[in-house]
Image (cartoon, rainbow, N blue to C red):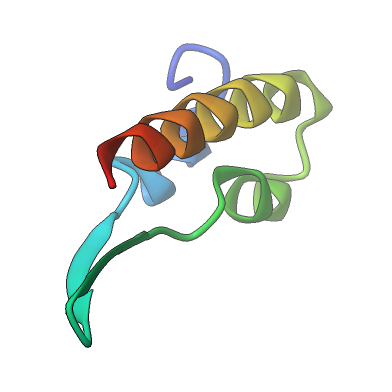
Amino acid sequence: MLTENQMAGYFLPCKMVVYDDGGTTRIGMPKPTALISMVNDENIEALAKDIEDRLITSMDRSV
């Protein structure tokens, strides 16, 4: 991501939160696609979407 646009460094690494919600484990994060949209660079939007999809898949498998 940084080789495409150094401004993306403001959003890396992707922050994730893991917490207990009444006995249920929850995992959350700001969506990379929403964060990267602030950079206004169409070239990295597809990368952000791929990263987001992978992180969501990983989170879904974890709980």
